[in-house]
Length: 533
Image (cartoon, rainbow, N blue to C red):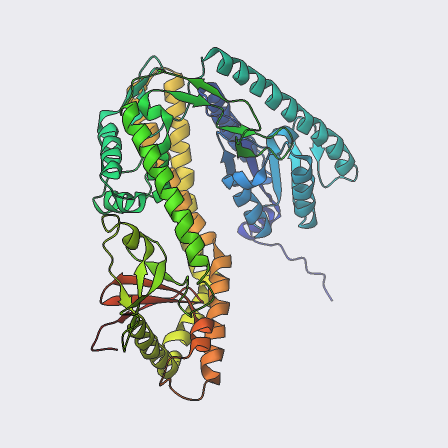
């Protein structure tokens, strides 16, 4: 029988050769966003792109690049975490990085990550140390070298803190991040941003006129007043921070926070652990010091009143089914039980907002009757009992699919593509600025726009990645379904035990509408009133 040798088509051989190529990516990082560091960052991206694409045995698998952040803690590096996720998804065969200190300055994180990738058969190559993590001796070398990198990081951090401390003592420190209402001029001096300052003055005036921080934040959000960082809404804590910040009356308190001395470095509020430095009349004030002092007095007064109310409320927390479970939809305060016409042949039980009780100017929400809430829950329970197969079962299925995340893969892919494009645009801007082709004003304007777009894109991606919450919601929904199936009949009179098992919170929207937040987070509205009760 003749011997036959099969000669494969050229395109088939090329396909096999292509399949044998290693999918190689690079990880880059710089630890600050100073211009010099950003130029280094751009140079790293360009270098690794050329290096990988010039090797015929490799296929370019992308660049993962974190800029302007420290490497001492991996959970703060979005791109690093994305790299690990792609490695786990088998999208990468090899990672190239400049050095161990660029990859991680925390020994535990470095070793843990390398072991994880090694178990997946993925190599990490450190150029400076000439270490391939798939080699037999790599882990011992890495343990030693990463420990050295960690100690260098701690030493550098201590030196930086010492230098900053000296500048604090001389009163020379100018914060890099200024509060809402301020900006820096071309010489780095703190000046007033008039557009934002008008909002700051309004916040102080509103508070002194009796409005609470919750109401002020709500009104600013409803009017579409932009926040400094492009958030969708004003938070009560943001308003409170503006009302308590000494910078608004021209002074400056330095070292309100501090960084811990050991890894992982953590930022903590200074509650007396470190020295503080107070500089009076440091810059132009937006509000008068007398206004700030009056605000502080009102805050202390309200804090004292709240403490008294909280003490009173705690006495009732376990006495009634609705105790501590009813929340005001206007100001966020808890409702308190009241008995009207006590001592007469009949009495009316109602629930009222504690802030409204204290001062009607702070919250306009009026009381709701106890029997109306109970009647509304009976209606809600009977709807769910009769229709749980149409409401809760489809919800549980949807939550499970959402947790699976498959339908979001294309969305995540598109967002990642957008992030890559925006990051590249940022690098191009930095290169043009460094070569003098772009003036400072245009550079800052474009850079701020890209930064905002990056923030929004990453925020959107993080929302898609938050699968744990969906898993909990699905499990809770399953609990509700199982519970409802066990109940034999519809509810005729209010059952406290069933209410406690099903409802997490009641939100009073108005005198005629409340919403029940179930244990799975689902909020269902109900109309209340005489005709319902």
